[in-house]
Image (cartoon, rainbow, N blue to C red; front, side, top):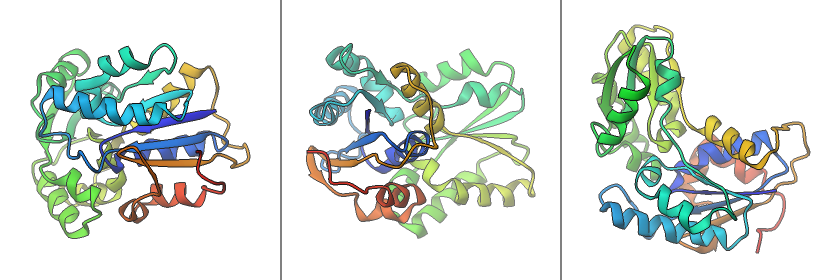
Length: 265
């Protein structure tokens, strides 16, 4: 079984690491776009064009499914990606975990990029799935870029700024950008100071999207299987290795450690 994941940058590491844990036997193809990032400031058409290019590079390695491990690409390019690749390759998009976060009816904070915060897309998810909860949208300018380059000072600064905008009585936090899941520990620490150490529930998309991909393929998680899965890294279509910044995160190190076979040609 071979699973491809795509994103503009290293935000795909979170879902890839979950997939590696769920199915250690699965070959993974990680396709990102350092030449074209960031995608956020592009027009919708521009995002779709880059997403189609990155997806096409992944598809050339004949995966059984493609995970769009990027909220921005899911919003602007999911229909185009499915039109191009399905039914041959199932395409699974990433949606912020607003519905499960709001299920308990608590106080929800949605950390997202400035482009997503207040967008019709996110407001629609809040309207449809969070009507019974108090919701605060928290813009996080610069955080995705700081994570992408593993800039610890910038991560600390941008996380602190977003924490200051988060209500102190928050109960649930949605990490609405796949990059943010790589620094969940830093977010937890900042919000612990903000909320006086109150217990918070965090909601990311990595586990749900990986589980959905396996469901689409009709297979189940088998974490006990031998770690025989191989890793292929594509950077704007070029066969490469994980970038140095990826190894700053536990997810990247997990994937690198499990790369016990040659890249898939």
